[in-house]
Amino acid sequence: MVALRRAFLAVVPPSAVLDAIDGLFDRSGRSRFQWTLREQWHVTLQYFGKVADADALVGALAGATGTVAAPTVQIGGAGGFPSARRAAVFWLGVVDPESLVAVHAAVLDATSGFLRPRDVIPYVPHLTLARLASVKKISLEVDALEETRLGPAWTVDEMVLMESEPRRGGAVYRTVARFPLG
Image (tube, rainbow, N blue to C red; front, side):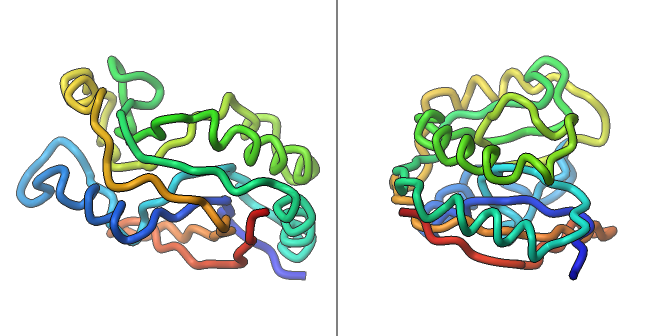
């Protein structure tokens, strides 16, 4: 039985989408944003946190994902957590968030025993673009991206269970398992 310290389930966009995101902002020099790295970019499906039995979680996810239809997704729009007026996180959204809701619902049903109550929150599919050292208003940046579509739409054919290891230069992600959809 292997334990995971900070587990999460994600969708990793294809290279063409990552290229479009990569060209969105000049991330060099000083900034109020602490930009995430390209290798960290993913659309979060569910955060699990500490998992005592990774094999059991992998089994639960494998059972759920084979029956879920592969959705089509496109990155677009932006927001902030907890809000654009008081943001600690700057994120890119999904043009049609409903496309991932069925996937998220299947994941919740299959993994309810692995979730802490604080991790069951309203689902907002997002890709974390940056963190802020302190809460700030980012309404201008969010509004500027309101109608933006980034890269082509793609069919999500797999989900990836990852473990996050926090480090001084930013978290490092390790792939634990991959789950095909459909």
